[in-house]
Length: 495
Image (cartoon, rainbow, N blue to C red):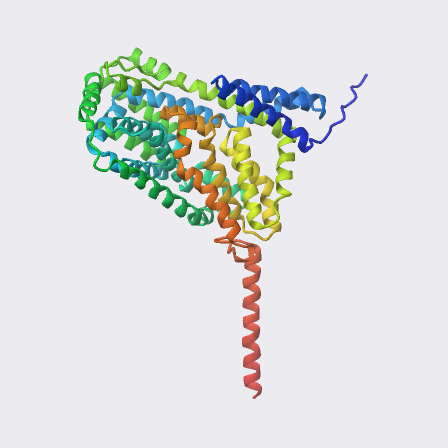
């Protein structure tokens, strides 16, 4: 006897919001009331989504399971990078690389110039590598240690580091998101980067000004020399400090900048870190242990020990499990049409260009929250709104820009997103703590939306040299010019 196929229903807006409401409610109770992690609340929202999909919408478990697996599969590269970054942090600390960076940083940097210096340094490194994760896991870790030694809030320093890291991630032609956004929107890479300059320069300039102003409060402030000397002595008591160790981050960052894929480039950093561990007196067994479990500092100085106890592949498992939970939730909503239903409703409010860009930016944020991955935060809204931008006569580079201005940078502001969780884990500062100070990430989508409403730098298809409409317009203009010249010559000869 053949099985009768179940009737499939379309996900309405009200039905689609039920899992979201369940997620928000459970997150509020678990995180705010009981101060627990977000893992279980995300799974509760996922369970609610499954029940709705099976018993109301008519989906089978196999279909839902495939959606979840596909969603987790889409972030598998990010999971592998996270594991390698954990190994890298461990070997770079145990190998004396991070301690050397902190040691010389404390000797060179002053509190009044720390924030702007950190912003510029992270921007340059991220621009060269195209990776905010690499930036945070390398120079970012050292900068947090320097900030603590200078008496600067770790949350403030982390916000500064994240701002600089995402400037490069957003603007570098080596960045995967910088390549993904134009691919989704139908633009070209360098047209996309050139168009982002309008929003990025203002957002970054305002960010730099804010950090300079905040830094003024440290002008003339006397350093706690005894505390700094205590940190320096604590570092030297357990690590051999040598400026040659600084070549390791230079080589690693240079390798990634030379277009070596992220995972092999980071593995090279792990190998170099392991070599440096030998100079610290580590044996093969200890190297294996640090790569797996991280390193534990025992200098006797509380701040030094807390700062330099970190790393190892296992240190990233909390983040990886969070990403997988979020991937399950996002996969359920995406595969059952619930996410599309919510997006379609948002699109109905986009009547003008400004509101269309606002809805696109909010959709990127929405997907970043629900799917917990910046790639989906770019790809899904890109697919959903590409035709709408074209129908309204807007150049694809407008869409690709707002995808980056919102999809890329807001991912670092969400604790359970792959990016927010990675930043928090690498820097040792919770996402909620540093988010208010990640000014570039906050300002970028705001500036993008404002430009949409005032019409500044909004390019139409007829103004886009890459557009068939522009080429047709130029061809028509040339034909009209040739016709005018022919008419003028004819009349002159006739006279």
